[in-house]
Image (cartoon, rainbow, N blue to C red; front, side, top):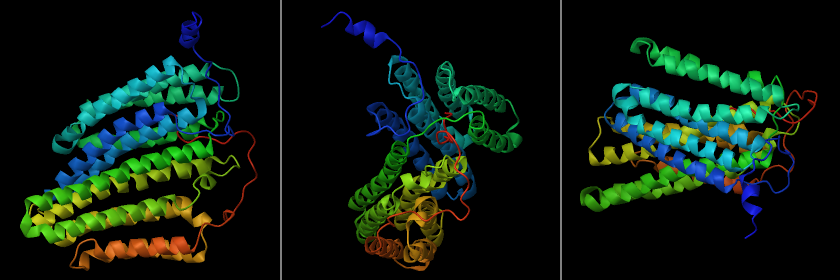
Length: 412
């Protein structure tokens, strides 16, 4: 081995903005490794939502799930947009990424106390750990002069201020913590909007959409786990064998249809190439509904299993809604984000109407049956009507902005 190899590996790479048109840009093994901890966090959140819904605590369960899922989504999304702009893959970048992963695991450990006792301490500590690591990343990126310098400094400063406020939330009375959480979540969302007006951070459309697709697969995987649980439950409860097996099969069908629907359009078109911040914000932020719906769907399947075996406080109709509402939100979200601009009139009618018809499933005696039929019908339409060769132009096309496209979530 050469003696110069070790010093070369120990050297830090200057953190300059990456080329948004770099050919062959794909997710790195570090990014895939990073995603693994989110499998844990999403799984814990879905399990706790399942327990809350089964016990009849619908409002509290959904509120807790929304708060926790926001932290999970925001941490994942922001790292993803930062990585597409400044990934150097040197040792310091890797170490700081691993620190963020540790923060996700701390956050996951604090999810149950949020649902049970409304105790946000562990979740906020884990969240702040992730964000402090990202402050370090942004400060490092700000050390390189160029058009991104103003944005990187604004990201670092904005994130730091909001983290101090998150820690201050822990000493507030419980009666006002909910309102404070909403205010701070809005502040987090505002940081990229403000920072990107101080400079432009570049993003790679194919890399970004691949990362979003990979996270969608993680969330849909939770639904397949729920389907497997239905089969396991059936093997232990012969009296409900038929209905449980049918739920398992129909869940696989619906999950496969959701995958088909989401990946039908070319997502990179939705980001555009005109540099408009609004397009990247729409794609980046609106995905929270798709992601949260996918996570809630797996919890709904578990609730449906409990309803069939008599282990829930919810009525059969209410239990069915825990499945159909997430599916409808997922489909409508995917349609609004990426399908509608790439589809003809038939697809743009069938997809949203089909999503709304799914909400009629609770009146059907066999759970998930109508939903599965509608999902299959949507997929058939998508097969018969491939995406347009060119996306539909926006109704009001603005003048092309100079410079590289703007990132909505460079902060993390």
